[in-house]
Amino acid sequence: MLEFIRPLQSILQIKPVNTTDLVWRLHCRVTVSLLLLASLLLTARQYFGNPIDCVTGSGMVSSSTMNDFCWVMGTYISRDPNFVLESTDLVKINAKIGHIPENERSYQKYYQWVVFILALQACMFSLPNFLWKAWEGGRLQTLCEGLTTPIVPEDWKLPRKKKLIAYLVLECPQLYKTYLVRYCFCMVLNFCNVLLNIFLVNVFFSGFWTNYHPAVKALLSFDFPSWSRYNSQVFPKLAKCDFHFVGPSGSKQNRDALCLLPLNVVNEKIFAFIWVWFLLLTLVSSLNLIYWLIVLCSKNFRLWLLTSQLQPMRTTVVIRALQGQGIGKWFLVHQLCRNLNPIVCRELVTGMSKGNNNGRKTYHTPKGGEPDFYTDPEGLDEVDV
Image 1 (cartoon, helix red, strand yellow):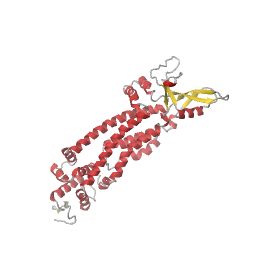
Image 2 (tube, one colour):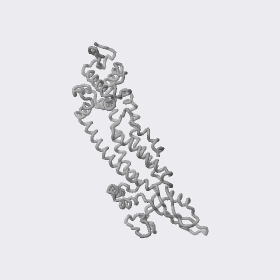
Image 3 (cartoon, one colour):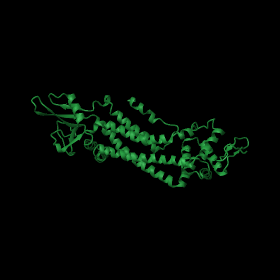
Image 4 (cartoon, one colour):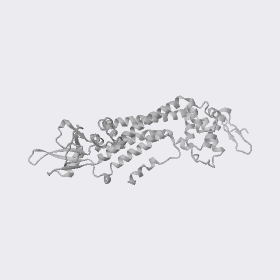
């Protein structure tokens, strides 16, 4: 079973620098991994056997031909969920095996496409993250290079500090506003992705979310007879198949078969989990959108978020650091503080504060210490001691 996990190792690997939040990673990493794992499991015939196995009577149609025909053309079950098959000498199989009129038949052809649908869903959930990586361009990774360790590295000296603070103070605020807008766009796209996938599965299974609700409800309440009854309407384990062909004398003949669908035992568990997971993901994503709406609308809340990451730094220092920089610069500093060493973050924000406050690039050398850095847009090569 370990061979199924190896292709997902790169997705699940913990990264030292994260440009996204937890809810985003639930979309682009956890959900994608779950969908790919489900897709791989459904292709594992060594664990679950053949996808279809049909029982036929004696005749000229071989079992392999019947299996291929029923797999390609589809099987069918009764639309009536209220039929009862009770007998003392038969096991209840939750399938109507008698004659089913044409107008009462529900054909099952989806199982050929389940693997591809799961792979398509994984690609859809990967799209927002792919766009964000292309737009972000590794900027945060470059800024945080070597500064994420608990101990401040040796190379965190004046030259690098000077360059990083100058970059944060002098860079055009409009560029970082675009940086934030793109992040918010991908975040909204994540939310829309969940809704679109719910709609896709609902269409693919002809009303999946409506039909599957009582089945999942029965499963959560440990009512396994009801779970089996409701679930068999969406993922039947036994179904019928008719093979029409022409006999030796030219007469039309029909070969009736009862087909076992082993993969539906796996499908029902996979989609029961997906049903619950997508609903939870929709709820969490909705709350996350509300949170970010508050962040974008409330300057005080943004200030509190950043100050709480820079404790014990005073609020006035943070206010001076962000003065005239715009919401885009706040977002970049917020991203840096989530990843950098706390000591480095406080030094960066202090340097931004002094640069914005003094309006010139100035060095002040304390006794026995290394010069502090102040930034000025005009005169990057001048030093006042």
